[in-house]
Length: 287
Ligand code: ZN
Image (tube, rainbow, N blue to C red):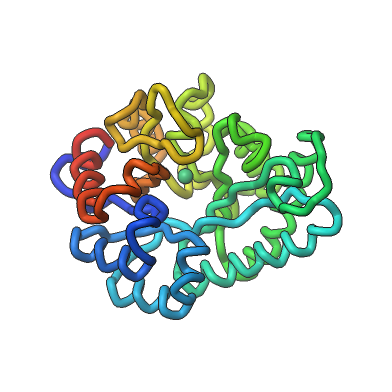
């Protein structure tokens, strides 16, 4: 496993971590100040400053991207299917313009939550089948732009509203079905917050192998967690053995960035520089 204790060469910042402290351009400037070399921006943050300005800021700062957040939300009723398809095509175009290496997919839960306005459904099996079909359709467009798609399995607590793909195994089953040749077009984004509890995690990471491991996200799981969405912990403040997961991922040959992604009212309330300093320190000590 790589030694992260000496520097933060392999730290990437998911820009949602400091979304309330400044716009994307301010975040990029802060990354430059702190020697952070990679980011994973969110679509709404890009839209807020404009795609061209965002792309220029990334280039001028010499930043790499570790992904683009996010595509997906494939589940909808029939009336919203075209909206979902076109929205995902725009995500591919934006990712391309920004120079992202992949799009992170949050696949959607039940239709009424993924695509608001959709008819109410309790059929999670149908939702999963839509996800399969939606990814297949998006892959056609993404392939023509050479943009890999990274399915992010989400903790089962999100099955209703955000993602009905909840384990690494489920995500890899989709990868194997839609990209059996392991072309690089489809893989997974593994986020320790969502997968740390899974008894099948280690064998599934081995199953993924280097060519399916497109992104690695870190934060921590606080006990107790007060809010499933916005109470993620800073690495080291919770119960996830992050090093053991990174070790398993790197044993497969993953050699990319470790992306810090913390949605937390607590950390959003602190000054950006303080958050980044803490991220760097914890990256070196506990990631
Ligand atoms: Zn993530």
